[in-house]
Amino acid sequence: MPGPHGFACTTTAAGTVFITHHDRPAATLNGSRAARFLEEVTSGDPQLVMARWTGNYRHGNERAARDHPRNRR
Image 1 (cartoon, rainbow, N blue to C red):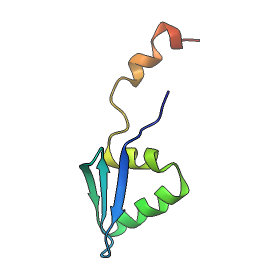
Image 2 (cartoon, rainbow, N blue to C red):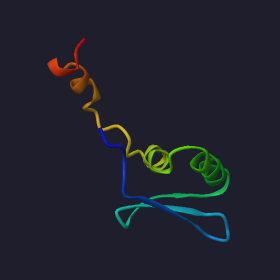
Image 3 (cartoon, rainbow, N blue to C red):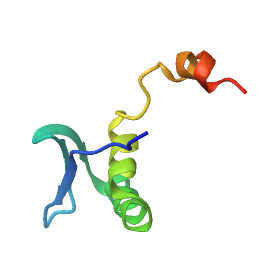
Image 4 (cartoon, helix red, strand yellow):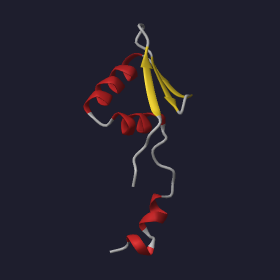
């Protein structure tokens, strides 16, 4: 299953982080949240980190997918 894609982030000189998804604004982080985000994005998969921070990570269908006959063990 492919991971999240289409995320990008830019940082201003003031320390504000803007996260976009397919060129649309998704989140703005300031202060300590921006610092924590920048630490996490450099240590892991940037696309996955940005998806989690914007809330575009889980869509509610995970339980249905787990119960699908193809995915049962």
